[in-house]
Image (cartoon, rainbow, N blue to C red):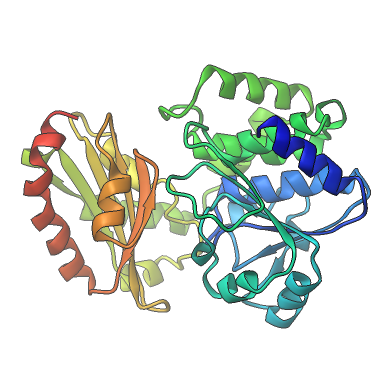
Length: 339
């Protein structure tokens, strides 16, 4: 966050505000860590702060302090719309286009509150009064830490804030293995540990609390994996029937796409997950090197994200979607051979 924006934000926060913190639809660890971490910090400054999410987030994140008090638009539409109308300051965290909030988009477009965007994805829209956008950052949670520092709040950062921000950094960096992990990311993680983030316990809560049904679903996913060696590509499919057979819960497929990329020589990995409730195929894409799955997702699958991690969707049936994906690969063969 630049000095001018930090001064402006400090000025706004010098008087009482009604603050709303909003993640994207289907929020992940970075989105919820950013919202809950910033909430704990702002509550210490005697502000009125609420986190309102478009829908539920995965159970493996609900240990985070404050998770039980999140308002959900999908369950409390009237309440959340009232919070949007009454807010004087709205933070949009881990997304940069209002349509990423799904059904909350229209209410947010009509909001009279000042808006602050904090996000690390490409191609930000111009809707916020303050726009802190940096695609080089590992995570929005690292950016929230920088925001707290810019607000002169690092010395009063609580263990609750530290735990939430650490969780977001941990998930969005794949336990610090992704290319977005910088020396500064590791310094921030160390500072959060010094402020009370328990690395071992946070890692256990996120990665080592599997239900047997999730492991069975992983087995099905790996059995379904197709490896396309001429294109250095691997992809997984999961149908609605397969999800139902394993009592699927939100977040159960988190990280599955990375198994394809773990195969020696693979440059591109994808997972296609059927959602009959939404009438779409959810798509996650991962890559190595310079191959941009952000470009692929934006061009072909109504999505986007980062160079090496992106998502999208298809309204075609599962088999048709995967056939279309395979048909695209010859177009990218040179880049997949020389990432």
